[in-house]
Length: 68
Image (cartoon, rainbow, N blue to C red; front, side):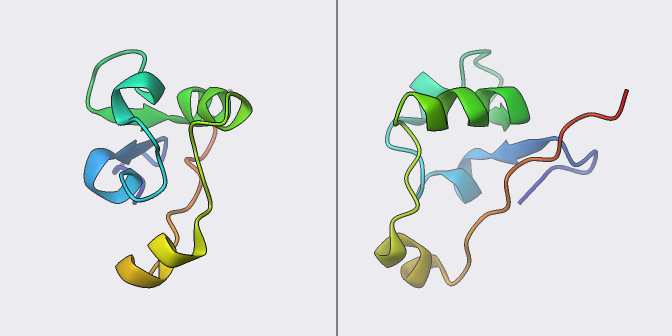
């Protein structure tokens, strides 16, 4: 689930879809930003595993990009 400001994904929501949370969370702030999410996807560290989505009951949304 995105954080209150809509631009991060918490570890508990991302874990079923992130192969290695620490690798994706390059800022080490325990949240995945939109930029970290995109980088993780590009590097193959994020998966849309259907079995993981079924187990958790939901698929986490991609973090929203900041509005400039």
